[in-house]
Image 1 (cartoon, rainbow, N blue to C red):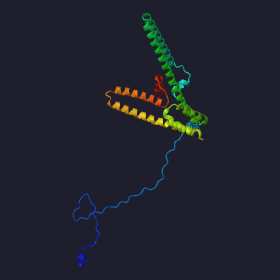
Image 2: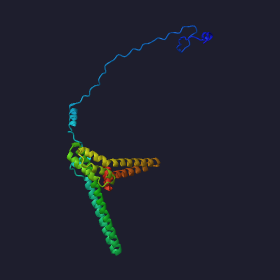
Image 3: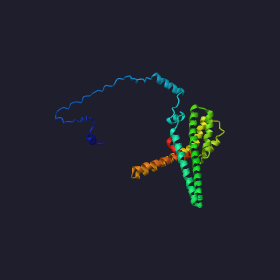
Image 4: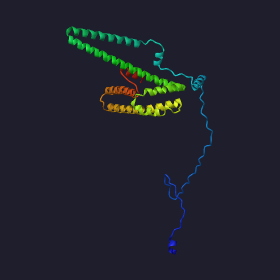
Length: 286
């Protein structure tokens, strides 16, 4: 590099950057220096513990009894009424009214058939056949209703017995109820795969609680998934109808219909049978 270029190059120098000020200082006046403040650090302090909860003797006795498992479950008001031995006047009134209506209907049909026989023999025989068909249909209806209510009652009893056996850790009752649960779903086509898995592991050495857990998982996993799908589809239909319905009364009616239908479908999915009185029983439980 030549000597002229070296002379023209400026040597590096240090310079101070002035701090910006809100107001302009007059020319020639010295700017005041910014005072440096030192932040004092907080001294370490001990944390004050929160106040302790004070329990009375009654509370301590309650918690101790809860740990020992000595507390009993409180029965629902309906169960207390059934177990209290009270006279159910509503049931008696409904039974008496049903008997009177049935007797009145029977007498009316008898008078109608007799009068038709008196007027025309062929009309009498036709009315008698119609009355016999009506009686047969009513008998079948009653048998189906009684069967559905009996099956719902057994299913509810099975659920309560399983809960009690698991709570008491009774291995003998758990094994018995596990077999009863398999029998309950033996005619359900949607549990065929689960029943096959249980048949393969039938001779395996397993604890009673573990065997019940496997049985419940294999039998009910597919049914639970399908029940969730049924509920989701029902909620979609309700949302669409309530969105396009012009009146609130139509919304209420359709929601009521969809809920009753959903309860019946889920009951039949898990092996129950619903009829007219069975549906009323399910609605009361829900």
